Amino acid sequence: EFSSITHGFVGADLAALCREAAMNALRRILPDIDLEEQTIPKEVLEKLFVTKNDFMDALKFINPSALREVFIEIPNIHWKDIGGLNELKQSLKEAVEWPLNHPDAFKRIGIEPPKGILLFGPPGTGKTMLSKAVATESRANFISVKGSEILSKWFGESERKISEIFNKAKQASPCIVFFDELDALASMRGSGAGEPRVVERMVNTLLSEMDGLEELKGVVVLGATNRPDLLDSALLRPGRFDEIVLVPPPDEKSRIEIFRVHMEGMSLDDDVDIEKLAKKTDGYSGADIAAVCRKAGMLALHDNIEIKSVSPKHFKKALKKIGPSLTSEVIKYYKHLTKELERGI
Ligand code: ADP
Image (cartoon, rainbow, N blue to C red):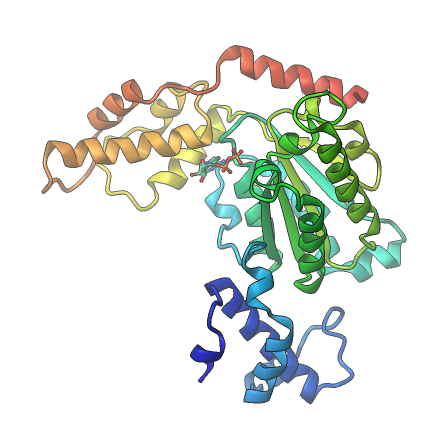
């Protein structure tokens, strides 16, 4: 019966629907429980019985037509899927996971967590992965929006869309809203390019939505950009993106870890030497390393479709085909930017 009622629902909607129905069942048997504050005893969860009515009530909130363009995802990337960046993982845990899962602790101590965190760094270094992983690990929903998409796909209704995103996020709380390519949104403000007024109004909508987010109500905004220097400085004021962090190009040690992540499921000859590969891949981003591993696998199959494992020579060839995407100028540029940002731009 549900399959016909839920026509137009995508997988994430169905997951959200089940979750909401289970929450309804919990509220039914424990009317006084504060689902945000309290943990549910295991015995209760084991006996939890979700009825048809719980689903019908959930259907009132989980609406496929409204979700059609603003997708709520339930990501499945974990910390262990990200090589290196250990300090960053820890600071994201503190800045995002703690406020979402332990708002009471912040209230008790009397401090406010950041509302928005901006990740910047060269392409392919793991900004999107980090954002998804922090959502997975904090068991939060995830809404991802590209700056360029807001401008093109939703042109003429961008402000309404931005508000819709925030409304959806509040409904789906705890929720992380991820604005990718944030510079596409903010760079044109006042610069005379394109339709500056449209962009300006959009940035203003974004700012006022961020201002309107109440502390500790379960919505955190993450932004990603390759060009933080282009961002409107209003976005970087306290209460907006008030933490700005570099996601750096991976150093040798991190490259070892990234190779490990991507070789995890691969069948490799014993003499594939990860340390040597990490030494040879200065300037390779995480995305480049992922591509090298894939390429090596393809080259092995190309040699012989019956082949059992990938050998060092396939990696050697793959490195010839896939070069580093980060030049020393690019790396220098981000170092310089970090200093500028520390001083406040
Ligand atoms: P960004 O958002 O910084 O442009 P992504 O997070 O989208 O980069 O990364 C693109 C791809 O590169 C990922 O899907 C993953 O395969 C690989 N990748 C990037 N950084 C890492 C990392 N630190 N560990 C493992 N894989 C990585």
